[in-house]
Image (cartoon, rainbow, N blue to C red; front, top):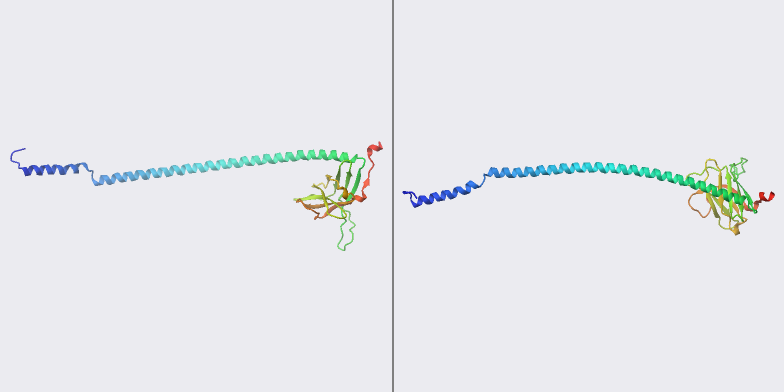
Length: 245
């Protein structure tokens, strides 16, 4: 303590020193505002960068999804083509097998000792006056049947080609009672058909037979136009060619 200084001067100096310490450690207000602005700017920059990254990833993901979908669609188209080719091949093989089996059945029926045939003709059309038309319809057929062979075979020609969702349907028609479905078949542009037919039940041996053009859905009775018809009562017995030898 210097001489000449009073106790009050010492207290005043000590108080001034204590007031200067807090002011020296606290930063100025403008520095604190700048710090918060810098933090806010960094947060905004990080948010913008995140948005840009997310948008770019979304764009890449959308592009990859579109590419994968295109590839899947192309592969599905290839699979559909292969399936169509497989179905066409199976149909061709099935058709060849059917022709072979039909040929075997037909040969068995033709050489049966009790072979009978029924002639099928198209119904005669009438003119506007109701009289029978003189025009000859080209459609005709013949049914070969044998009880010992256990089946029958229909050969027809001159029929119109089957339309979409249409089939030719063979019916056994008794004199009394309901019709009995025998077989369905399709006809191509050549108008020819060879069809195996179920024999009529024993009670319908003397029934007639008709061929109608029907919808492909099942029906209990004929509803479409008659294409061919014949009468089992007028069946012709054919001599077995093997016996002639």
